[in-house]
Image 1 (tube, rainbow, N blue to C red):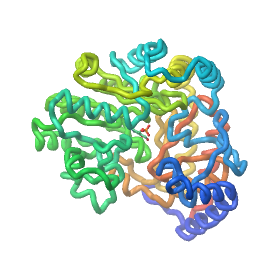
Image 2 (image 1 turned 30 degrees about the horizontal axis):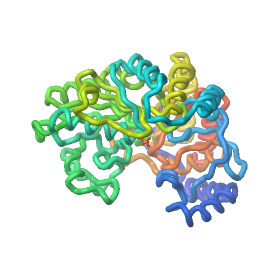
Image 3 (image 1 turned 60 degrees about the horizontal axis):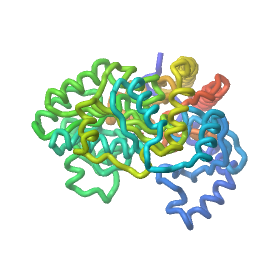
Image 4 (image 1 turned 120 degrees about the horizontal axis):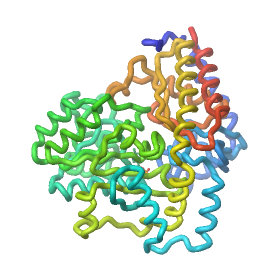
Length: 457
Ligand SMILES: Cc1ncc(COP(=O)(O)O)c(C=O)c1O
């Protein structure tokens, strides 16, 4: 029985945040010093704005197995896992071996290698889409998918889900995490630029719809009849905690889009090889026109892939669309991808992910209930998240009601007790690796139990 409204003691909550912040600061003097030095050479002291954390970023020294060690010598079980790119775990012996081997044989040719063929053949089998191309990041994969949908349909409007992130391309940097006072009415959401620097005309061509609402999609397709190229959808939203699709939603999306002459691209950059052997495509049994992959498919090397049906990919095959990139199919990435997909993320590992996920789900839910904390745990094999809201989140507007404070205090508590979580609080989810153990996941549960006890009224 989950708790509908938190009954925690607010004074205890603010006190706990204060003491945990003090401890956090005391544990990271070297990270603080590096942040200061970095700010003179790296804009904002980080390589990507999404590595920034308050009170300051944590600089890591090494990673091995399920653990990472920071520059102050603190060791953590890694629940961040490189924003979900490390389902193989750190320094996996097979990755160390293949990358070392490949480095000695040349790291870049900008010509195809046999590994690129093996990986494409494997992805076809795994995701049920026949033809593939490679890229170097999730952003490149989704950018290619958007271009393909527009080129093939000869239409300009792109639909996306309100509150979904698909990388930092202009077309998709719209209504990613818009503030509640800018989003407009539920029935007609405003397209909110995620950053300045996006041309207004580009933003206007991206229209947003709420997740899990087929009527809203139908209305939008009607409103822009004959103008919608396609829709990019994360089958389960993974940058708002985790928001799962309602039964029948994804199939309905495909039907409505195809009925309107538009295409469907699944962004499986996060879900891809982490929530099932064949990603959301196989888990939900819905085959889109295009699938975008990146992150954990590369075993820790920069990677990206886009797969599609014959009808879609023939536009690339016959040269009507240039899908390009100097590093596409890079031999080092291809070798790591081959070993990751064929030797490490094999079908059996998903059973072990599911076993660990169940320990997390039942343990976290029990802890929340015992502390009177409104919330629930969602697990999808290697992925999972605790959401601090009594009622299930079905879309971005529900997600705005999730408690930032509870997500933040859990982040602090986990950090100070040896669990490394991604920055950005309630938006992130965890990723397990094949090297995570039962002890590792029990540590997370124990920390949440500590939190629940500390906050109980
Ligand atoms: C769902 C989704 N799509 C695309 C991307 C972009 O991937 P990348 O950071 O590799 O460009 C991300 C990154 O977090 C993502 O979560």
